[in-house]
Length: 417
Ligand code: AMP
Image (cartoon, rainbow, N blue to C red; front, side, top):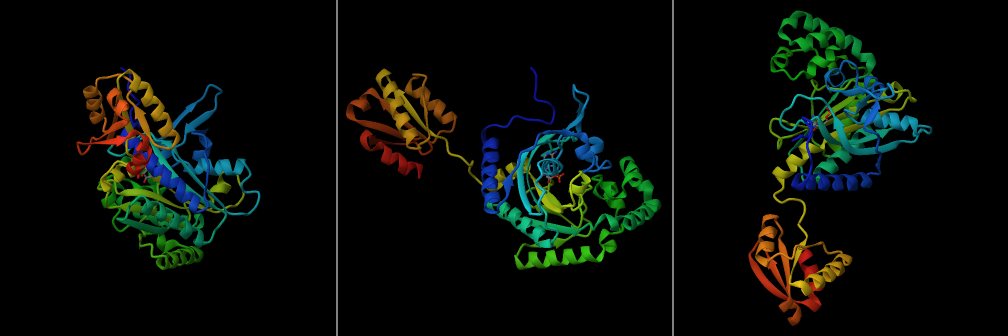
């Protein structure tokens, strides 16, 4: 038997219903904040990621699903969507005016990751980006959108961890300080980190190997190398967040796994998640549009992992997000047709109803209904039709009532409410 490719999985049942529920809330929240959806291709030319995510990042070095297509193009399945959104915005001339642009996306991403709980090779992200505003007000507004979404999903145990990673101009001095630090302690770091120290010492800071994390104790901090404008930007953002009562922690050690961040970088952690505590991350990327061949347009955004969110939803909410439709069970031949007519009328009125079409014995039909988790069954037998009634069985309570067929629609509406 062939299996789904390692690290990928089929979505169905309760897990998919959580995905749909989260996505519906995301669409509503984005609309409330004036963000427009964009759908970009899964496949992009590899250059889109090399020039944005950064050649020295783990994503490019180890985790790309890339290949040469039949036309000889080097393409990759997107490991994240910001680069694709920027490519699309440039190509479709969104930046011809200086107007701000607010865009969001929901879709699958691909990374050839080592397998662990909650980490997949195909996973989903929801993300939101604001382009064209360099001021910290845009950072704050975009974070307000994020918190609106997270609160809409029922998440409360959240911590916003923020830092400023400065501008590319601050980096050389910081990199030098890091290299000096690593020169003294290089032997304590893993082989990957030795490569990182040569290519981009910043990457060592997000190495997940515990001995590397321990060896990083006392390392130089980017916050000691910031330019004045970055310091001011960060201070203003913190003042706005305080006024808006969005609780945050200043975390001078925070750097993100992607190269394109400038000034604000942040993560939101959730204590509901246990070991996998980072729920999402994002930040400002003022150089990215230019790096990808567009005009000088600042940007700010984040991406949240839908897979982990769905797990979290199952732990904080008791019920699955969706009720089963009513199951209508006809017993007997004339009842079968009458039931189809009733189902048609009810559906036209917006009632969700599924018909038992097997002509099965009532006992068997009810056994299936219970096994499949239906909450309400309606039974229509020839006897019932003669008497002008229908039997309603509450399968969760095990109770039963008889309703008048003429007024059944009114009663169903009550149940659906
Ligand atoms: P990143 O794009 O690395 O900043 O990741 C943003 C969010 O996407 C993370 O916080 C995760 O929730 C999610 N994520 C990243 N990689 C994976 C993966 N391999 N499997 C599941 N979720 C992921």
